Length: 285
Ligand SMILES: C[S@@+](CC[C@H](N)C(=O)[O-])C[C@H]1O[C@@H](n2cnc3c(N)ncnc32)[C@H](O)[C@@H]1O
Image (tube, rainbow, N blue to C red; front, side, top):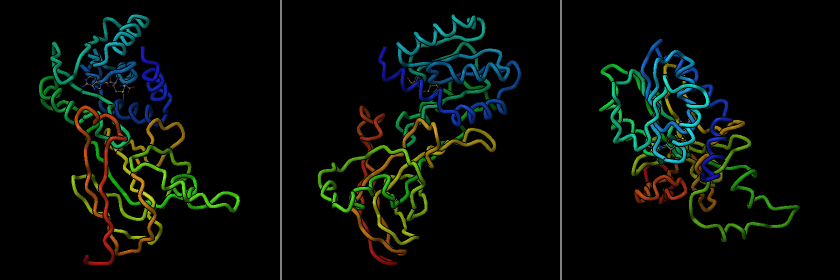
């Protein structure tokens, strides 16, 4: 089995706020005896939570054959064959033997949409969710915002080292997206704006523009949401960062952003998503 995949699943299970959020959402959503579908089941964390909250049966759908084989083993080791049916394959093509009351999934990337969760769930639910059934998450939003790093991150090349200049490093940095776990909250220079092919980030705070950040918020259930920003201890998703040449900006300036989504084959890689950014100065420009 691909060891990086195993490590990924390990990090996801160890991400306690993630697991707590799904636990709370499923406690609210799963009625006793409910039929649940776990889409992108991985190592079955959400399947097991759904059972804990009273699901009568869970259909666990997993595309990756090695992960599905591992999940099958977990089912056997826990004597869950009567309660869990594993289906290996793309959830978009899956047809369950009966309709589910609840569909649950966690296929969020660093930016949010890389694993195409919304479209996969829409296709899956059309065939497999009973009318009036529920989907967890209910929605997924990606937002972008302009930010000034302090010297923990991209901004570090600004601040020098023991009085020596290191700013030349910036010229060697490739223009491409990076992933970052914040140790402290950075200063946002604009409000967060939902992602679109073209958008505008209005600067509301003066500062030094270092980057645009991208992050997701999943609305799991009433009063339960999950986001990868601000970074929290144990968070398995880094925040997506588009580094910019450093520029001082002031309230009234704006960044015009064009989002370039990668070709389908690379869409799962957050670092293949691109921004074209231009600053316009002053109000009304
Ligand atoms: C982020 S992991 C989540 C695993 C597990 N649900 C959890 O919460 O720990 C997403 C899983 O979805 C699977 N997956 C991605 N796209 C899929 C699709 N179209 N159909 C079925 N499984 C898919 C991946 O192989 C991966 O195991």
